[in-house]
Image (tube, rainbow, N blue to C red; front, side):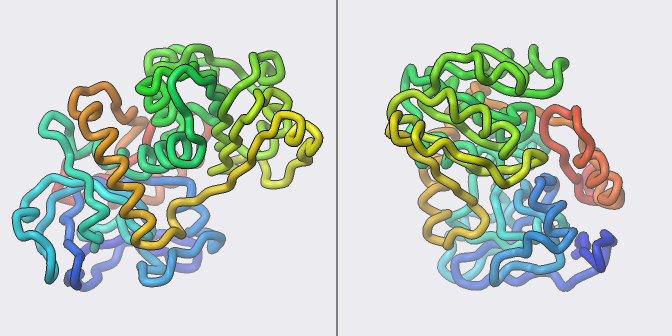
Length: 319
C-alpha cells in the first residue's frame, strides 16, 4: 500500500506492506481520508498515536470499501461503502479498522463527503449528547464553529431543536453557519453579551472560555474538546461555577479504549445514520487534495479562514 509517512517532521509517501486483518478487524481500501488538527500535532511530535496503531502514518478518519475481513467478522461487509475513525493510519490507500467502528455510508452520500464525517460527527455527538447532555430547547454556545467539529455540532444541535449560538472569527462564514442551523452567529468579542447558556462546547481554548464562563446558566455543562489557537491555560471563576452549579468536563476520543469507542459509535449510528441519509446533516468540504500533495494539504489546513473539511483522495480517485 501507499502511505503518508512522518519522517523527522516531514511528510513523504512510501510503500508499506498491505495490512492483514486480525480477529474482529477489516481492511478498508480507502478512497478519502480527512485531515484534523491532531494530525498536525502528531507530525510535530506532540500527539503520538495510541498503542497498537501506526506511529508514523497519520490520519484518524477515512472512507472507502471493505476489501478483507478477519476471523469473526461477517463476510457480508465485503464491498460495503463505509467510513470510520482509527487511532492513526488513515492517510494511506489501505487501513485496518475494528469492525464495530465502521459506519455504513448511505447510498445517496458520496464517499468524498463520508471521508470527513466520522471524526467530526462522532466527536461532536459524544461531546454534546453523551458528555454535555444537550436536550430539546436548551441553549448551546459553540466556539470555533467554522471548523469540522463545530459545523457538525451546529447540525446535531439543530436536530435536537436547541438554540445555537455559533462563534467564528471569520465574518464570511456567518451565512454558512446560519444555513447549517445556527440561530445566531457572533464574534469572540460578543460572547459576554449573549443570554446564559446550558452547554458550552469549547473548541478554541482559553481565549474563548475565559469569556464564556460568565454566561453559564444554572446547571450548565462546559465540555472542552479542543484548544486550537486559543491556549490551554485559563483562570476559572470558581465562585461562578459554584453559584451556577455548573460542571467542567474535558474529553478526547482518540485515547479511549476499543469498547468505549464502540459504544459511542453505536450511539452515533442509531442517532445520525437516518438524518445523514435524509440529508438533514451534511459535511461541508473546504478542499480535497491528491495524496501526492499531502504536504500542501497540511499547509492549507493550517491556514485560517477556511470553512469545512480538508480531505485527501487516494491515487485511484480523481479529486
